[in-house]
View (cartoon, rainbow over the protein chains, first blue to last red):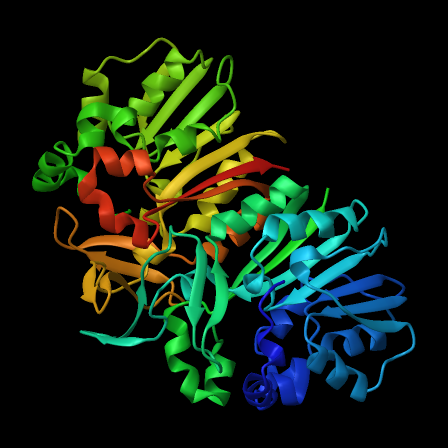
Length: 242
Length: 242
């Protein structure tokens, strides 16, 4: 079974304080770029891998999706999602993405926000996603960017000309243990070309690719994000099933 | 007119000592991955942007290409290419890629090795390439990787855990002045997502993407390349005209 940091009480409490946990999609600066990769959801069947509090699932239901399934490993996350109210046509399910079995169900859009870098066997999961989509279906996801996940010491340091991101270990894919809001959080570093290759191997065409860094408007609102221009934090990908 | 460092005498002399200048494609460690993105060239019309000494043009002619055109800004490069002998069906032409005009000619494959990061108006050039290819035609190129071109100080430094690449300035596209083999060499930094976006905007589908880092076999032959695993040096792209 995959690591389930979200059911660690301390982690869960700290996670609950993140702006994107409290305020949902509007507090996620990469959301507009990710949203732009989605087709209009009206009448479509939507799956969210790593649905957390269900912000995206509720938005998808509001957009008129015919069916919305949110999957998460964390019982606490799913309980919180249910507290917000389950929209008509929506359902939450507990599942481990390492062993996801959709039981033959089909979807038109599969979405995932900042979850897939916790999955070790991503090739298997991408194959499962492809098998649940018709040709033309969409797989839209964000992950921590490979230059973000690569370094053994992922924190800005002062260089001669200011802050620099100490990029190292890019070629060495595999687990990275960090202490983000809890000790011993395991992420799986993959190269950017590996994400592209896994998608192609599973039968997807790459439709969109965005490396998120803050815009001028983001920086005006959040001057504390100044260092975020030095390396992309998030990789956003839109893929179309062939 | 674009900067023409290759006609600087000191630069040209130092460039001539690079393994890939002396020994051609076999001395370029990224060549096998780039070659794998090319279709079989027999009977095809091939254009090489930034042909240098003509190593690729001669290889393409050997592979049976019906016609090969090599373009370069540097008179010295083209003179050296001619000294190696111009194969039947091949021709070398002097042109500035900032203002390339192919005069209505068509090609089946456009290739470029480690040249496009010197081009300021890449959107224009990619449009010119697209206009010279039929649907299904191939555009295969390598550039210095965006994490390589981004930093104002592009050299490894010692971090607490060993060598790190001081990534900075990734979001700020534009010129970077470096002193690679000559003072004041100007490269144009672009984000990886910009390369993808420019290709899509011009009417290409992304077919292949490889971030070159040394293999175990490369490292056995070149133990001095050890730090190259910490960040990709080259970005290799294969695109198909839609």
